Image 1 (tube, protein in one colour):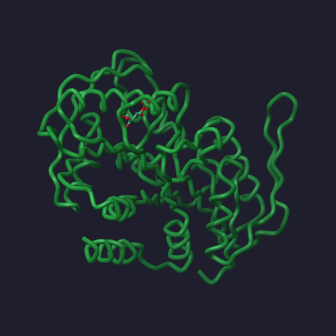
Image 2 (spheres, protein in one colour):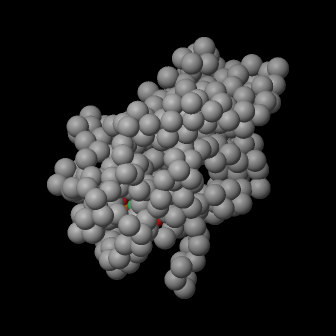
Image 3 (tube, helix red, strand yellow):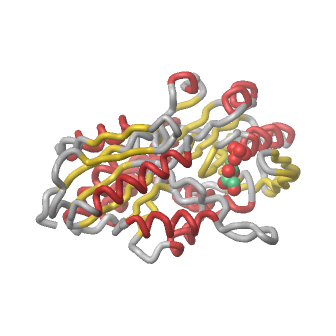
Length: 322
Ligand code: R5P
């Protein structure tokens, strides 16, 4: 696009947006976001965006509802200011886990949120590691589900781990785990998780060989860390030698940090799709920086060039190190 690029940082992950803007050599467009005393949110764009190609960076991480509302109001404010195009960059896209009616009379929250984002006036959506790729189908506008696998591969190769098996902590995570295992030429195992009630996970069986292996649990989200810590305990009971976790979105709510500290997990490797507050930065957690990849994605979206090439290059670079 020949139109000027503008980057807007929502308040959910300002450091990420700042870093992306730095890579792109595009200063952040100033905004004003405030809360009224009753909790309502106000958002205003402080300079003209007329005719511009605008990217709003705002994960809908906790405080989920406030961050979602801020995104919607920012997009509405933009829409009324005549930009050429609005791209919502939602590194972590909340409400995705409720993506189907699993019980009678439940909402499909992911669809509701997709429709809200679309109705606000967004033209394109970008998100990292969606819960399931089918969520893209809830949008009738273009949506990109950005892959983190090459970044994970790079991190694993650096560790030079031996006898690795990639483990899906539940059936829903098999596709993601298999993709990573395939690139790394490693086997997979699956934990048969049974969830008894919301927020409480009980894991039971392991399908595959984990005895004396370095297990890498792969998940999209760590919320209360119930799933992953339970999975780690089961792996220990099945003779795992060492356990690592790779999970893209570190929500880490409730007892998560305490659980991670106490769990038989050597390291949690996550990303900065969600801003990790200081009090959650424990030594067991390392963070992969997605800013360079996100900046490249935005640049290519702006220029109208393919993203596939970037992923091919990352893949080739990783394979040379293998
Ligand atoms: C579930 O389908 C997801 O992929 C995650 O495994 C889950 O959301 C993690 O939640 P928690 O950390 O609270 O167990």
